[in-house]
Image 1 (tube, rainbow, N blue to C red):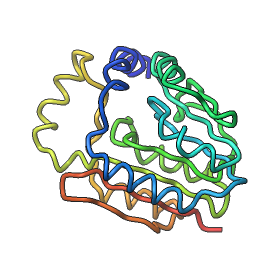
Image 2 (image 1 turned 60 degrees about the vertical axis):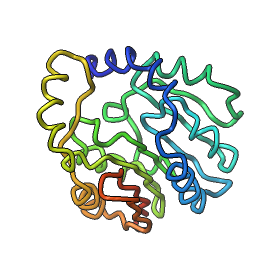
Image 3 (image 1 turned 90 degrees about the vertical axis):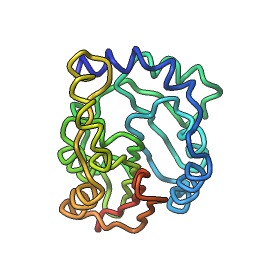
Image 4 (image 1 turned 180 degrees about the vertical axis):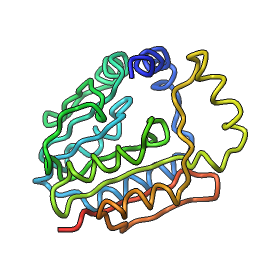
Length: 204
């Protein structure tokens, strides 16, 4: 994943400076997530970027770890503003990290799964890392809805211009969750071209 790390280091400044594309949708996702937050929970967000989502959620839980593969993204994220006392940034690759089963009460992967080499394996690892009854919150671009990406993406990736882009559908994401014993309890897609937002609960 070194190449991906370098790409995200290069994109970090522009990525963090970019405004939220759909503010009402973002606020709705925050609202849906908050419905499941409890004061004693331990949270992990993978692909945290600026950490601003973590800044909003951390005051509502016991601890919040914001992880990103890019050192530059972490550096810029930490500089974005005050960080709650119970929130920490961590530079790391979730797929390669040694995480004990049942480590977290909630794991968030927002705009992440479609950028990973093996989304199915990542969901499997997330499910294992959750406590019984824990939650997996994801927002994922169904890249198969964009045929042009399948033409452009391989060229951009070949020259290291854009990150890896997995070919994935909303049905794939739902299937990965259910086969790992995760029950989907929130399923929201604003329109056919939007990211699919899911909250899934690990069965006790």
